[in-house]
Amino acid sequence: MKTHEISKTLVALAKALQQAPNVNLEQLTFNQPQPSPRKKPNPSDIPMALSALVALSQFDKAQWRAVIEEYKFPIEVRNTESTRDIVGKILRHLEQDSDARRKLKQAVQRTKSDINPELMTALNFLLK
Image 1 (cartoon, one colour):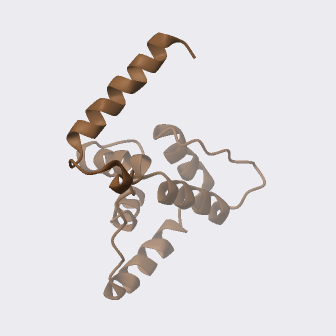
Image 2 (cartoon, one colour; image 1 turned 45 degrees about the vertical axis):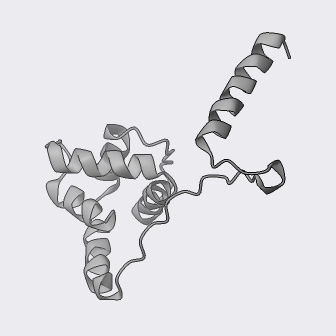
C-alpha cells in the first residue's frame, strides 16, 4: 500500500468519525448497514398470488425467454428446461436481486413492451 492510498483511507475514516456521535474509543462500534427487510406478505393476498402463479404457468417458453432477453436477466435457459423451471429461475433471480425487481416494476408501470401484457401484470402483482 502506498502513502496516498493510506491518506485517502484516513480521510474517509475521519469523515465517518466526524459524522458519528462523539464517544470514547472504547464505545465506538461500526455497524454494517443492514439491507431493508422486505415486508411480509399479507396472508389474505395468498389466493390472489396463487391465481397469478397459475396465470404465469400458462405462458410458453418463448414468452419467458422474451422476458429474460428484454430485461437482460442473467439467466441461462437450456432447451431441456420446462416452463416451470424457467419461471422458478426468474422468480429466484427477482427475489435475490432487489435492483432487478425495482427496474422490472418501473418498466411495467411506464412502458408497453412486446411481451404479453397479462404476463407483465401478473409479474408486477407478484413483485409487490
